[in-house]
Length: 117
Image 1 (cartoon, rainbow, N blue to C red):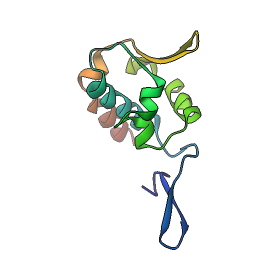
Image 2: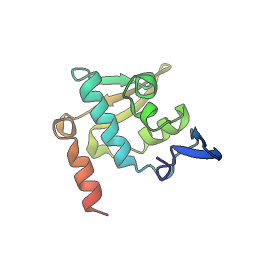
Image 3: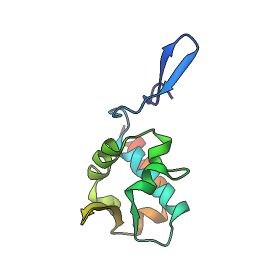
Image 4: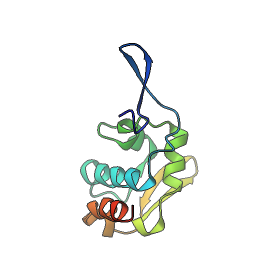
């Protein structure tokens, strides 16, 4: 968890969750977490609101200890080929599914990411 920047040592034997931006968190890993969460939490919905991605049990925001701002930055950085688009319209902040393809085999995101490294 320390290598991912999720926790930091604050004193001997004491650790703290790190909620700073996570530059070491690849957008591909975040995307996999989003799709996996979506498949479990809202499989039949074409959109999911930002608050669910941040605070629901099993959410990527909770798993990676992300702030609102860093989550939005990662959502905006998602490649279009993942079939996900972040939208802020009329005060609503949602992630919209534009394609079903990545949802059918989310592990392809991880396979592609690790094969390219």
